[in-house]
Length: 370
Image 1 (tube, rainbow, N blue to C red):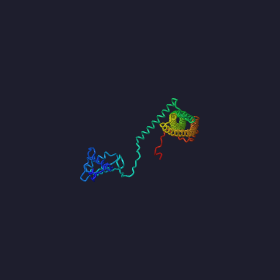
Image 2: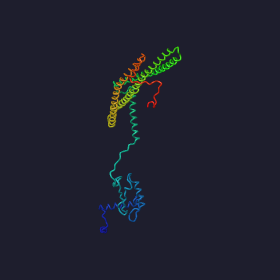
Image 3: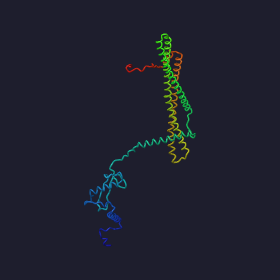
Image 4: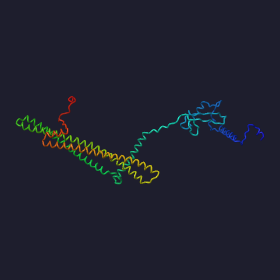
């Protein structure tokens, strides 16, 4: 015991510093004895620095073992020699995986996530499919008498009248076209008959006057028939524009209105079904989303209903004005033709600014126009 007290290098084992020195020594010994310690296998030069080839190999292995995003260029290995009780210290960039990092760059800005066009198209297809399913279910329910539909009685009555009138106007149009075809054939026959009478008038001296009278009569009838044919064709063109363009455009708006009505009723039914069910944390978001979709389709339905009402109003005004003029033209032309009043027939065409094309005469060439 006395020798132990006089030894200057002796350390009191009860002192805390002694325990720390002993633990450091044990850890150092374990590091040298353990074959799995990578630091024990790293050879050093005489001055305590790593060999170049070994250092590059060690840095490459370390780069593979470090977390993703930490470059080897941002990592420094400091060796204090293996005679020391301290191990190597790794100094790197931002803190990751329990390793102390030293940030060398400025603030990191995260770019917004790039939208994928394929995902956008897929989302559009999904929404279209869902909307089509809801509308198909609504239409089937209405046909089976199970689903309810929104009805505007006044607007529906106007639409039904419009569709019925369109069918009647199409029938008038077909009959007028048939009359025009038959009249054209009659006028052509009268013209040919007049030419035959005129030829016989020149060759038959004993019947010169009789053939001449008939030739003049047939030519006059052909001329008046051409005038009447011009009036009828003008009537056909105007009614055709009214039926196949003006009314058809309005009916296209009506179809859009009916589609909006089906969508509105489909989402209304969906919202009603959700409101009848339980209200909890899972159903409340669905109810809120359904309410928003219902409101969107309700606004679309109201807009289309207003558009149809306005178009029906303007169509009625335009239809009355057009048909009034065309019916007066048709009546006056037919009456003047069959009464033999050539002047009144020509005056009718001038009143409606109708120019007749001379039969058998082609359009003037560009040289004649110049």
